Length: 176
Image 1 (spheres, rainbow, N blue to C red):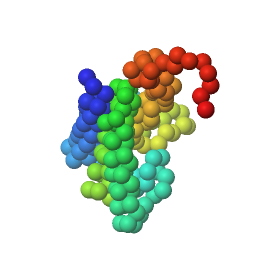
Image 2 (image 1 turned 180 degrees about the vertical axis):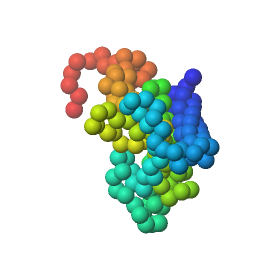
Image 3 (image 1 turned 120 degrees about the vertical axis):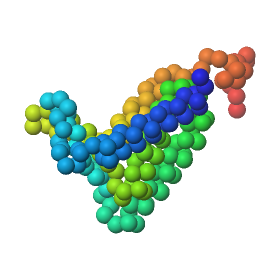
Image 4 (image 1 turned 30 degrees about the vertical axis):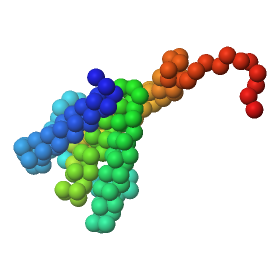
């Protein structure tokens, strides 16, 4: 599978899983009325409407703020999507596909409902993590993939293949 196809597959699966989980939980269950749902001693399903970005930063209560975040998400998705189509490795393309799929999933929520539906709450003892969704998890996984790709020799562009790096120098004189 080419890097671009792998990235598109990651984008598509992220977007479908994100929207299916949100629509299924919000419209297909009584979670809104009966929350929290205990999944494990450290995890609950809850309903949180996030009007900001990651970790609830930059909360936007106005319509203009909402649409600014939608446009910002779409612009980021477009730029990262173009990068994804030019990715030289599957890891890079999949990482970008996860981020783009997550950005689009949250942009759909913001455009349709004015906020992003978050529902997974992780906690332990007195410690509580922010509430997130499938799109958020995909974005985090994508960023981890970007870091891993940048640490790999192929991600840094240090290929031993002469076809990719150009012809080998045969002289030893310095070039001016």
